[in-house]
Structure formats: C-alpha cells, structure tokens
Length: 322
Length: 312
Image 1 (cartoon, rainbow over the protein chains, first blue to last red):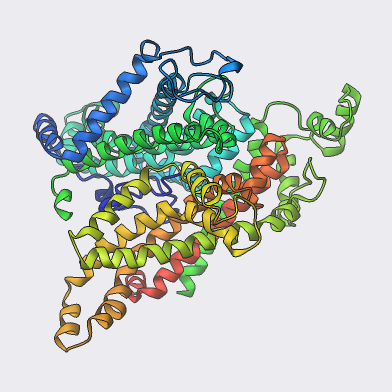
Image 2 (cartoon, each protein chain N blue to C red):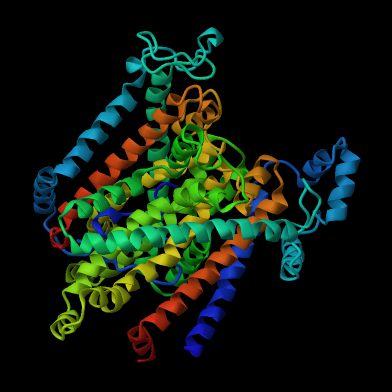
C-alpha cells in the first residue's frame, strides 16, 4: 500500500523480514539486534525504556499511539453524533458546531465516523496481529527447534507462500472469501504470519545453540519445558519489536483492502472505505477524502516511529549507524 | 553461473507446484457452487437439474486430485479456463491487460530512479544539510502515506484543481505521470535513503581516497566509482520491492481506471469470476518468482565478488 517496503527506510535501513525475499534469508541482526543473546531481561527493558524516552521521535510516536488507543477505547463517549445516523437533508454539510468536520454523502457526522473508525481499524489490526502471532510462534519455534525434515517441510511451505506478492495473495484470498472485515482480517493474517515464522525460526536457531539450553536439556528438562521456559522468553522481545513495526503496515493493508471495497461493509465506519466513499465527492467536499486518509497516515506514522525507536532502544549497537 | 541458474530454475519447480496447489485450492474458499454461479452469470435460472448437468459437464463431480490434475494439465497448456463474465479464455484476458500493468510498473520504476538517485547522492554529499533532512522526512512519509490516499490527493490537486494531468485512463504519456508517481513514491523515498546510506559507506573506503588522491575530478569519483558500488544494496532490495509494486499496482489501477490486470482482477472479484482470479494469482506469482530470479542473476553479474563466493 503506501508502504511498499517495510521498516525504517527513512533511516536508510530496510527491514526485509516480511519481504518477499524468496531466496535470500534476511540477516536477522538487520531486523532486530538482540536476537539470541542471553540478556538480563530486567536490565534490557529498563535500559531500553530509558533510551526510548530519550529518542524524541519515538516518544512522539509513543504519545500518539497512546492517544489513538484511548480514542479507540473511549470512542462511544467521544463521538459528538451518532456515526451511522443518516440524515439526507444534512448531506455534505460544511463544518459547523454540530458537525465539527461536516457530514458525508448520507449526512452522517464525519468526526464521529472517524472516531469510531479508530476503534474499527485498531481492533481489526490487533486481532490480525494476534492471529499472526498464534500461527507464527508455534510454526517458527517448531521449525527452528526440531530442525530436520519438519523444518524443511515447514520452510518450503513458507517459500511457496512467499512466491506470491503479499498484497496480491491477500487480495485474492479476501476476494474469494467475499467482502467483509472478518475475511479481510483472515486474508491479512494468512499472508502475514509467514515473515514472522521465518524470523522466529532464525531466532530459535541461534538461541538453541546457547550453553544454557544445553545445560537445561542435560539436566533432564523435558523438551516442551525447554521451549516454553528457556527459548520463548528469549525470542519474544525481538518479536515484540517486529510486531510494533508491523502494525502500521497491517493498518495500511486492511484499509487498502477496505478501500477496494473488500473490507468493512456499510454502515460500519472504516477509514479505507470512508475514503472510497469520499472520492466521488472530491470536488464538492474534499474533506471527505482528506480526513480519513490523514487518520490512516497518522496512525501508521506513529507506529512506525514507535517501532523504530523500540528497535534502536533494544539494540543500542544498531542505533550508532545513523 | 550457468550451474547456479539451472539450480535455481530447478528449485522453482516445487515452488511453482506448491503455488499451483494453493491457487487451485482457492476456489474452494469461495462460498457457493461454481456451476450455479456460471449459470447466473449467463442469466439462466440455476435449477437443480441445470446445475447438476453443468457440474457433470465441467467435471466438478470428480474427486479433488483428478480435478487438480485436469486443471494443471490445462494450465501447462496455457489454458486456465474461461472467464465467467466475458466468456473469453482467462489467459487471453490476462495477457491482453498485462502490458498496461507492465507499462505502469516500468514508469513507476523510472520515477524511482529519477527521484532516488539524485536525492540519495545529494543527501550523502551534504550530510545533515537541508537536503538530507528533506530526504529523511520524505522517507518517513513514504513509509506511512497510504498509496491510495496519495493517488486521490494528486488527482485532486493536479487534475481537478490545476487541470495539468488527466484524471484517469490510459493513452498519452501524461496519463502515466500521476499513477507512476503514486505507485513509485514510497519506493523512491525508501531508495533515496538506502542509497544515501550505502553512498556514505562507499565514500569512506580506500579506493575513493585513491581516486581523489590521483586527482580525479569529483564528478568522476562520485559518478563512476562511488555510485556503481553504492547501488548494489539497492539491487538486492529490488526483488522484494517488485512484489510490493505489483501489489500496489492493483490499487493504483483501480484509482486511475488504468486498464491493467490488477483492475481486471478487482472487477473479477466483485463479479465472482473465479477462473480469472485463479489465473491472476498464478500468473502474478510466476512473474514475481521469475523476476526475482532475474534480479538475483543480475546481482551476480554486477558484483563479481558474489560469484566467487558462490563458487567457493
């Protein structure tokens, strides 16, 4: 969508973790720095938080993200009007005290729709992210930990999914399932878990060789306990960074598919579909296409800033490069 | 090199086989009976007998593996079925529209080059100056700006308000400007930043010092020695970006009513024209995989060090 390439490109780096690199495994340290190192968790996070707060842009990202989440949570209390109430005599009204941003082609309050849209976009993206993690963590961990034919089989499957351009596969799956937010969410998740699984597998591979893992196994800890107690905690923090970096592009993908008409169906206010509705009234009411697009951009921007800051904070070595 | 290419081509066989299985399986995601849909598309009442007769005729009653083999046999003979909507072969429909998509993609790539190369070089040469900050802001915008919004804004300002470019459609070169900029903007901004970083890397190396020490003019140092080495990282990224461009083209084609395969696929989705959607997915995957192979090969040609490593 807007973000054809993910990552902190504006810093001169490109995160290829979720890219369609069919044949080149991305160097993991480019994606996240601390993968696989035995770190004192508490130290890591308190130090990281201090660095994050010092990074002004990341702090801006953090503040905006918090505000957006608050808007999403308290949406019903913040909306000045009913977002789905149609009143045709008020259609395409200019901003007024009753309708602060004016009304859309059906006379619905634009601001209220934008506010409720925050909740829709955030919740759909969050659920998609959870589904992605629920698939990718087991697959990546099993693949990396077991190795051998299991690893081979799973990774070949990943290769096959990566042979499709991301958005095209999501489009086709959503298209086959039929329009609807749930289907778009499913489509985005089915496409999205692949990159994570690869990264997690790589992280597990590097953690698995550490001495403390061997010690745990030698002392008779069952395999499942080794994975849950020793491997997963060490893999999780880089995955959190990756996920934060990725929320922006999830929001973009979901609103993009909605823009095409595959996602939210009327009257649900979703930014992508609002933009699509608004484009026909470009000449008479440009605000109908300006505000929803701006809302998407602010959310994506904030998550990108926060994700980049988090990555730098968790990887102090990497941040010296800029 | 030959061995490497052959090996890669050989590896494509299982990948494409997997791709074909997934594409074939897609049809099963769709709600409703394809035979019923086809009848409706032709404006006939889907009675039970008619549906059953058509299912038999289409071979839909055969077991899954038989149907897959039949479908695959057709695909290998460039027969991906007929469009429910137009009644023409899917292959012909896609091949008719693909040049438009290719034209758009190439135009977007040209924009990326025209934009990213000068901006990247200038940002590296004048580090921390205005142009460097500008490139940073643009890259940040590029990663966050929804492509579909950018397209609409460009139409609003340049077509509706200023009337410089046509609003939509394909034809003259001026039709190409706004869609190409929309499609290429994110990539251009990213690549400028990428080029800046690798340019800075290269400029610090010994051979640049040597070139300067021997009194070579700065334009040759930058243009011939530095740039050539600095573009290499961008080439590795190119394969990945291509996937995003092809995906982005779907949206850009829809906004600008560009008659390419992407728009055709979206229209087919809303008409539930399943053979076209299937054919589109398969075709794009094949194109993407082959393009990636070409990128990797050209990377080996551009950078002899890679070839040496592979040999050893």
